[in-house]
Structures are given as C-alpha cells and as structure tokens.
Image 1 (cartoon, rainbow, N blue to C red):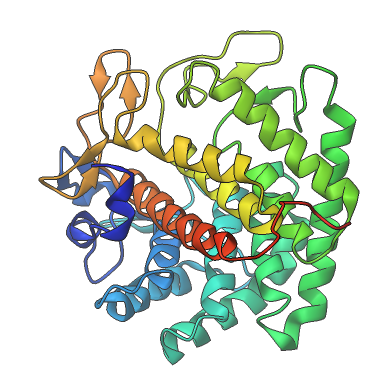
Image 2: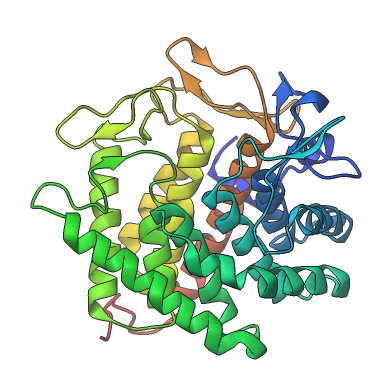
Length: 360
C-alpha cells in the first residue's frame, strides 16, 4: 500500500463489518464479533465515509447507518451510544463525544443529496439535537459540533442562523481555551494531549471558513504546528500513545498508537490546507497518512490487503491483530482526505500567481 492507494478505496472490510442493523464495533482478527454490538460512534463515522464516497453501494449503506443513528437518538435529542444483542440500547458508554460525532455526521447528511430519505433522517436528527449541542462543554465534543455547525450554515438555510450562533459560541469557547492555556513551549488547549487531539485545531479551521478572524486563524495554525512539531520529531508520525497520555512536562508515551489519531491529524491538515492553501499543511497531512502505509515506529503497514481492513493499532509487541470498525473507518476517512488534498493541490497548481498568502 502506498500513498497512491487513495485512488482506489477498499470497502470490503466495511461491508464485512456491516449488516442490516448497522456497523459492528469489534472484530477478532478480521472476523466481525457480533457480541460486541454496535455504537453510534462507529455508525456516525461510517455514515460520513459513505456520504463522501462515489462507491456504487453507498446509498444502501448510508440508509443503514442513518437509520441506526435515528433509532439511537432519544426524544430530547442526545444519542444512546451502544446497542447489544439481547439487551438493546444500554447507557454504559454514552458520552458527549458520541453526541458530537453523531451531530457532525447528521450535519453532513442534512446537506447531502445522496438520497432523499437519508437527508430527511439527518435533518430531523439535526433539528432535534440542537438543544443538546448547546450544552456540550468538553473540548472534543464541542469541536465535533463546531465542525457540524460550520457545515450547516451554508447548507441548511432554515437553520442557518441557529447554526451560526452555535458555531460562534463553540468557536469562541475553543479559541479562548487555547489562549488561556498556551505558554511559550506548550501551544495547546489543555495541560495534556490525549486522543483525537487534532480535532481541536481542525474545528477552528472549520470555524474560520465561515468567520474570518485573525485570532481564530492564529489559534488554529499555532496549535496544529505545535502538534506537528512534537509528533513528527523523529521524521515520521508518532501519535500520543494511550498508555498514560501526554501530560505537560512529561514524556510522550509511544504506545499504543491507534488509527483514529492518525486520521484525526490527516483530517485537520486537509481542513487547514483548504482554508489557507499553505503547502506545510498539505505535506504534514501526507506524512501523517504514511503512518498507515508503514512509515511509523514499527515500520509496518496497518492496512491488510487480504481483508481490506486496518489493524487496530501499534503496540510494543507489534501490530494489534484485530481489525475493528474504528480502525478501518479511520483509514477510509484518511484516504478520502488525502484524495481531497491531492485534488486541491492540482487545482492550486493551475492558479496563476498563487503565493499562499492569506488576506485577512
């Protein structure tokens, strides 16, 4: 697998992990584990993948994933995250992050013309969820909702004003969080880096796309550059390991490294490149993507060409043998993002007099 893989996305494992209810959570090796159930987190990511694809079966799967999200949404607008065989929906792993992810997926579906039924499901869920989105406080859940609102402003006219006001509140909260916590050698939103870190600058770049403000852009660029400086220090991507996370003043844990974190960085770089046209973000995104292809601490690819899946991560003992939903969806989302970056790069190269300057 090379960087050119973005030209031919492999949906075989996504299909294997999906049935009439939705996308299963875990796999044993490359075989789906039905006992693990289904989550809103994974079905939201799966919906985004198929909405952005030109896959011939995308309508069938978009309907499947949007119906799962529709069934999982409570009357007050939030989502039950986990469905288990024999039990139905349980509350064990409900989270604000899952609300933010589901809202983001539905925001994309609300403006996508892939299928009228999918669009109507998503629009109903967006409207019902707006009140819940207003109360989100955790930085990552706020970031997911901010990206969703930034999409809705220009694509869902009936709720454009509401979406902009929500985006404005969320964007100001994240921007203020950054400037309250940054110091000379720690340009970040919190005193630690944990999972999906790049979603925070990603959200600010998305906000900047609908509200041009130098303060927002500075926070987005400085935090993404800080992340890149730290994670590419060895010349290749080392995402923050989940064995303790990275606390300011401490060492970055190297394991376990998970595909969702590499994906988060690729997506942030895509958004940054779209907004700024700066080649540094395109190059950072391409280097982050090569983590999947073997340019990583273990020098092994995570993509499994036999199954079409992606290994669940890098451990001190080697590849995680399992290939769950989160991993393959992360790979697919990252691959789509690289394809978008490549297309934007071609368009930018045709512009006469392009010098990557930003007019503020």
